[in-house]
Length: 207
Image (cartoon, rainbow, N blue to C red):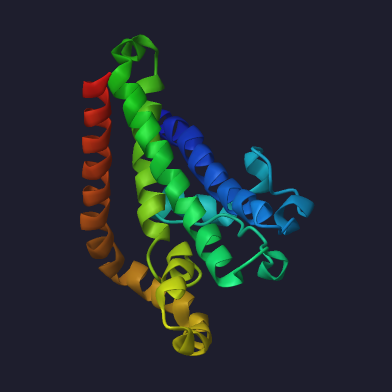
């Protein structure tokens, strides 16, 4: 049973992480930056995006990371500040869309319950995508939420914000190992899950 649980989690994790990182690179590419493409990151091959240690950490302690997608805002067309906001937002939004799709499939096609293991994989896929979407929106560097937050800060404060970014990983590690992070995440994950559940229910009622 223990091994079976991990076999469910592997495809769920690979899908969530791969599309999250691909979304970052794709949006940057659409904005004019081909750095991710030149590094082979505009691909559905999970091996291009996985950080082995980050993946192992996600399995063992519930949080982890992938290889950051290289982005160079100097190549962006138009407002670079807005471009980084869109690139940062792309990953979490993709995770929420995947969570919506998996929950919709579970609700719209109850017959998939007859397919061995598929419902379990979809449920775990939903949970991981909500987790990754919410976690990455936290406003601590190097998480995507820091890029989203930077877009809404006064331009006069941006230099100071970028100077304190170097302490973001330290703050994040302290929050994780102190247990504070999960007290922050739990209500946010529950809220996001409920919103997606309501949205899927409304859509199913319209069909």
